[in-house]
Image 1 (cartoon, rainbow, N blue to C red):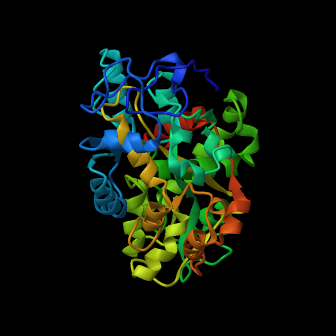
Image 2 (image 1 turned 90 degrees about the vertical axis):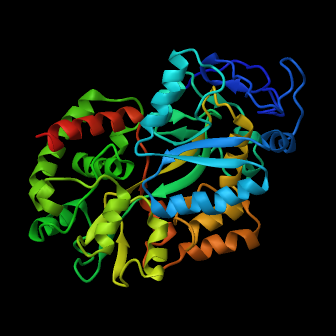
Image 3 (image 1 turned 180 degrees about the vertical axis):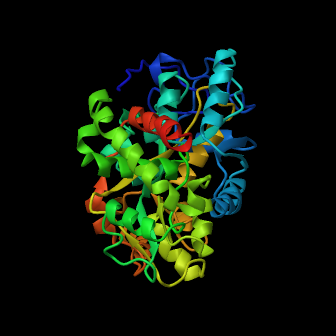
Length: 423
């Protein structure tokens, strides 16, 4: 829910905002402990160039999910090299769950470590963002000052809110995730992929050839929400505040449905893949014939690379597909806020976004609004989106479901564990 903020002190050199900065929930943002920061109380220089100057010589500790090999290569290749040109060292801290970074920040806050924090930037969204925002543990108010923010529609619902919670300038949009079903068209027909029910029917007739990751992995969580909305007859009734009655009316049917499906999953559902990359490897190795992805725009590239067979196709269920944005966020006590801001800005630049979306990147779609780019910059992105192996962007957009609040996400993840995994 919306959380009002009050003006915070100008961040010395690090945040260098052109307007007054604010920290979530009224927590004043602490000045970073960089040698280039002026003494407390001195005037902060204006403009993003001053931020870049202050960031030189800093090491930015970026905590992020580290299970995607292609994304890791992009981060430690293109991104790291680009930051080095600006005099910034990138230290990618790989984690298996974003909650690890969140808990580290919360632990430091509880211990009173309000400056010199160990986490400078987090790849984040959903319930993890909600947790830090509610704890007043984020730096806010700087997003619109980033040059690359001009490439984004900050007022669009998917960016202005994160799983139902207003972002309020406390995180920077980075990537757009749009889900779809990836399948082998030599094994499944269009009828088999038309709906969740038809997919489940196919899976039961072809045991072992379909699976999904275990929540709280974000791809696994998306799969469970997709099945939940289909079971409940739509997502609209779950928009807004958590409705216990609506949830309780649909959830038991979902658990029964997934328990009935479980013997037909890969390895009879005795184990679930840990994450999306593991499922992708099963598909590439011809161990399964279908899976749900959050990276719809990268499937064509995987076919062109030879990772996937040419029979690979995508489909969207008749009940719709889930889409949302992921962000980067700076903890309130980050030691190197200048470098974190520069990194967040770099990731959102057209050059970095195109590298990420292309064949040498991880295949992720940027949060950039192509309508805000000059035609010559938008054209390469548009070309990447057109692929005979992928669902056309217009169809994806037309069927994308609104994202629900993090309260639903958290409840579904916990209840899936209790009612499916531990049954």
